Length: 427
Image (spheres, rainbow, N blue to C red):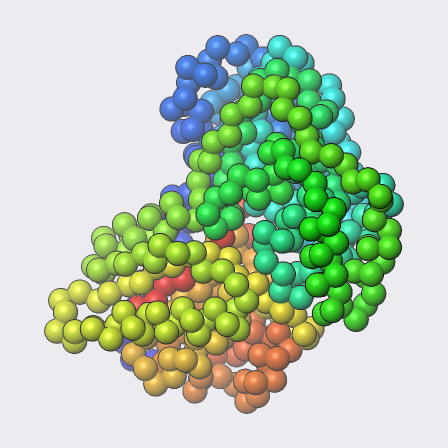
């Protein structure tokens, strides 16, 4: 690896890590409360629910600003914490597939909402991962069956919108149904969005966003999924569906939704950091979505077209920045996820070309691996100690392949969930 490529890779990773620091959930919540202090300062009693991958940090930000005005709080996360704010209780749940911990957390959430004070402000803090961490299935569908269904759908490469529609349809709390249990007259819902487009009804499967149930649409989605399911799980769900699904929630309260962070804001931070490090930056407006095996080639074609007018005499290198959330069809038992596979596919596209590309999940956990993603260049393929590229790709072993090339990116769990980042630089 020549010095120029090594320096570029170090710089791109530094930009990614620095951007993560600037999107600390605790700081985001503290600033959101402070900037809207006229709303919060009128309440002497505030109850707080914080759910998701960023739940610990978000709760800490609320506790720091609201202090003793918080009468009680509930934190639900898949990330344990040694620092729990005063008057908060903590439940450790799971992700990405719901289990008994998710059911316990979901029922605890209902109990919390049922006992809220009508005269208090109820503050919800929701981030990515909420859908799996709090789950109360409709009658006839066990938590085990719902978990197995989630796995089948995700491994089948279903889109996030359809997946969340299924989750909401089979839930007693999602799709705004949680509102039916809340006694508080005023609710503020602060959200950190991990959803391309920032659709409030999709973030956390819309716990506080009423959506009508549509049994025919649900059955249509499940029947389509059944074609790719040899396990019989989808057919079992279809057989077990109750005739009448739980209806949409009803908004009886004064309810305010506010998105305080998102993937597009994260991309803005990355762009600013790139400019400071000497790049000309271009942020792609359209989020990157769809199945990785198709999206990777499409994204690279867009970038190649853009760089078709690239001038070798440019004073600054150009950094293309994109974000989104893709899916992967799982056929094997390998280690890795959508970002590792994206990096692996890019390594093939750019072989012997003058590119450096980073693909990473902001949560630091890609699929079933402990990697955030990968960073590849034109010579990554030649550095691999794993001779069978095609077999590794087919068995979803992208994480191990990146490790064999020294191309893996590892951050550990970040407590941040702002979807995925793609940095593409031609030098």
